[in-house]
Image (cartoon, rainbow, N blue to C red; front, side):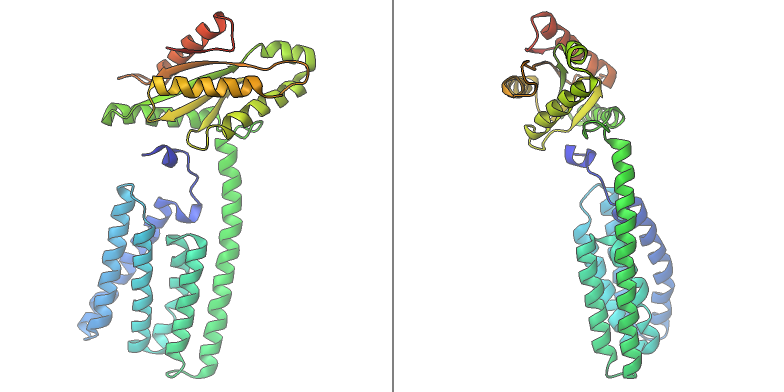
Length: 328
């Protein structure tokens, strides 16, 4: 699992467990149909259904292996469209009704824009193929009802996704600064230590503390203190270039997790961040600085011991005069 995977928020409709549930239901539904059509001599339709099932199984295995599933999702939908058209050819009006569950499946396999493209394409192809075979009034009503179905799916996906995003942010993000919270930090650090134990992939964390923060609160008030915390968090996020997740450990302390980075590289990164904050005009009439402790992950190390190592380095930086970087 990469750092990007650990900090990515997945939409509900593309969640692997939900997608796999729909895939399993599709397999259970389509397998008897493949056997039935084979028994009645509809070999092309039966073959397309079997290929559709194989594509679904391949996609499920790709998701289980942690691989990107968008390409296999496209393959599944291409075969689904072909199967729908074959159903219309063999079954006429009865085959047309597969357009509705197929449109729904689109939104559980691919991002909304691509799902809309497939669903609308399926509707258009179904209408074109049905026009010479069915009463034109039926085809028009089919297109209208399919269009309303796609519209409803967009509204439903939009509402559910926005609510889900809000709930996910509440569970993952610190409400004051908008950076990741301590709960999510523990998950990410545990993944990093496991990955180091399994494959030797190194990682380093930076424990960052705002110097003399209590005196800022005492002199300027807690509102100003919160503003300083937010400004420091913004500077850290802006200058991590989106490559390292930032967590608020608590109070005025932050942790920056550097994937695939040893302590030497992390020290250079930490020193750069320290200078940026030192030179920033955060609080009028008073300089704001940070001390940073750096700790590289070690073998058979728990996350609490890893943070403790960084805290020891931070303590050394504080005792050496603050506004410094020290390594464990």
